Image 1 (cartoon, helix red, strand yellow):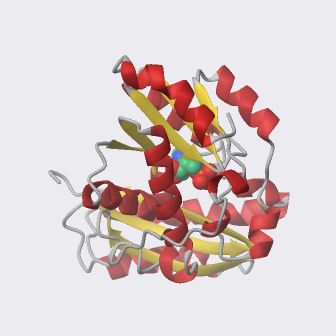
Image 2: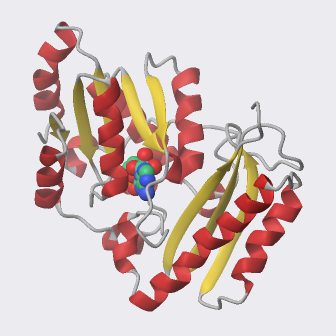
Length: 281
Ligand code: AMP
């Protein structure tokens, strides 16, 4: 389905019958991570909508936008096999017939990390997700923990703008070697990929220290940096322990937190994280 009108006409009977709609927004090039969100949506809803839209306004680099993988035929086949009921795959002209004069901006949660590294990124995400929420009117929206800061921002968007939507955040799906599934992984050579595995290894080291009882964020961050220090191909952008919901740095982990990293490997920007959850939190 390509147009907003067609999408809403198809959803009309679903809304009318009061069937629960589960919504999974994506930029396509679907992989197991996306499809795990579809599985989650199917478990908690009666009708699953998947959107495929490479949203230009959330890219801060024209090259990255250009290089982003696209294969709608394949995405449609995968979605169908996984039990998606409706795929909404609009064109850029359909979503932005004119450049949008309205932007959804958030303070706080989006200021640091991905927000600082990619100026304008979260404005683009929050604006397009707001549009998609209005078009699809889902009961449940499913996002991945892989983009933990995005999940925190969407949680806040739903609360602040009174969307009657339940947010589900699903765990990160990894490939067999531990690399977080990502549409960008196809751009890594076998050698770069081996380097990229260091990200998960470093996060696991922090996680192991945390399980052993380490609660000081600086020690956990140091463990991550240590693990990556001898991998020259890895240009680390940040290694941070942050509050899971506010996405602000923490000194001592006392509430649910996230150890997050971002790095460039041969020009490909990758992010990954692991949850750090103190007992009883
Ligand atoms: P994207 O297509 O990259 O915008 O991602 C669409 C959704 O899939 C977002 O909610 C992501 O957090 C989620 N996602 C991407 N990669 C993974 C993964 N490896 N595991 C779980 N969810 C993921």
